[in-house]
Image (cartoon, rainbow, N blue to C red):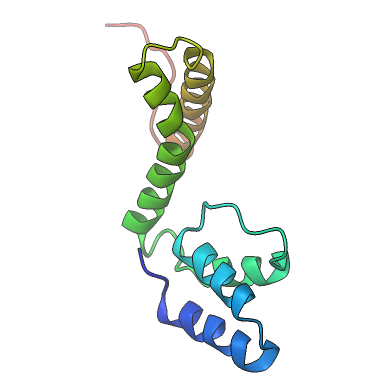
Length: 122
């Protein structure tokens, strides 16, 4: 998903004022791929400011869901490849990730008004 216009404008000002094209490229990457790891020399405050310009989740739910999906894909892609190549050492990591996602999912579901507790059949 491309960054919003406000983010692009903020990033465009960096080379002009700071004369630091490398930092601008890092910030553009952070804005375009918010779940990627920033380069060590990038200022964390600038990255936080750029990310704060993202529209709130309730306004752009599809973008938030896409970021979540990308983050999960980023963390599991190599593990799936190992599994596809016959290695079994990826299973513990995949299980741990799956369990964490289930925990988070149940917490979010409860906050969203869904009943996630066991109930006895009538």
